[in-house]
Length: 116
Image 1 (cartoon, one colour):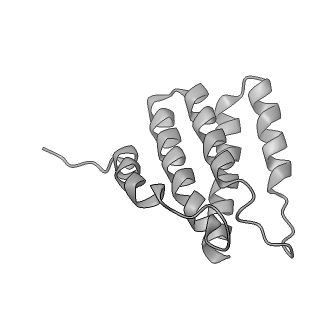
Image 2 (cartoon, rainbow, N blue to C red):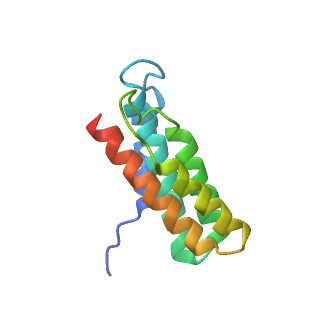
């Protein structure tokens, strides 16, 4: 019997911990970060199954959950341009490329959320 780490199950286990998180103030980034991580785990699971449509939808959900909470007024953020490229790729049916771009943006924004 081999043990395998299931990101989706792990993310769902965290749900009670983040459900009561504050929605305003300096802790907002921390509050929404958990939701974004859970949606990313669902995207990873869909990607592993080869379901690119669901993968992209979950990445959009993760990016939407995080919103702009990661940003500071002094920050120069170019990740929005990469999301435009991801939307164009998805529109042309290149769903794997779109997912890769979205995942990179999400990871960068999550990193900024951690630092900020």
